[in-house]
Amino acid sequence: MNAPSHPQAARARRRLLLAAGACAALLPLRTIAQPAPTPFPTRPVRLIVPFPPGGATDALARQMAEQLARQWKQPVVVENKPGANTMLGTEVVARSAPDGHTLGIVTGSHIMNPLLAAKMPYDTLKDLTGVMLLTRFHMALYAHPNFAANTPAELVALARREPGKTAYAYATTQTYLAMELFNTMADIRLQNVPYKGSAQAMTDLLGGHVPMLMDPITPAALEHVRSGKLKLIATMGAKPSELVPGAALAASVAPGYDFSGAFGLVVRGGTPEELVRRIRDDFAGVLQLPEVAARVREIGQEPIGSTPQAYDAYILAEMDKWRPVVKATGVKLD
Image 1 (cartoon, helix red, strand yellow):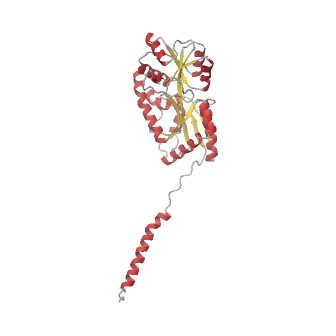
Image 2: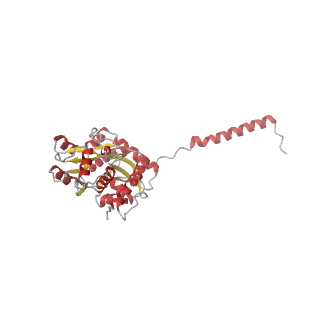
């Protein structure tokens, strides 16, 4: 038969048990650490550029890849895969593993292709995830020095006097749609003249073969403006470009009008959010380097470095903006 417990001894045992329980409750807080981040990258990273080598975007991609390779201690290989209105290169990313080792640079075509193509080899919104808006570039309406209008208001007046007789050159489908939107918002009718590339269109503008050209704002084009070989009628964004802050805005005659281009970074859909954020932060850090930021501005662009959420929201908003324009014009890729 067990001897009865002394009251003081019983109280002491209870205190010990309570103390032990408290320690046990605290123990996981001290010993269970946050899971270690998944190592990245564990092998060379592919950066897909959907343009031929040698262009400004390709040069910028290679400069960023060089900086990231130093930081990641893995090669970052730039692969040029032009074709199919940038879909050829973007498909490589859409078919890759969702582990962040294949990244893609995209442009406005990334937004426009689902609206223009009856069939695509991937689903833009499901198979791809936005990492960040890398850079923005502004567009401008240039004119030959002999062109009758000098300002947006004079252009609108001219176009209304002679509907459909004032022509402009363009080199991309999105630029054509942007000018159709301008026609609608300014209540005018300009005649479009398509070109396969900006270089030939600019040559013909300088030669006086076409009166106007919608094209990006670049240091080279602005040099023609400064020398008097061209004049700048308007910039097309809602806000002035850093390169020509005093230029007139197309929105002055078409309130609410806004058209600018952008380059973004995408990764395979389903890539873990933590990894997407890590890649975004590393790219954003590279964009802030003085030599990279200077290069961005040399090619006529502005560094952005948005969050993944902001870039995905931008893509959806742009699709909503251009969908009715595509429907109204009936433009298709195939």
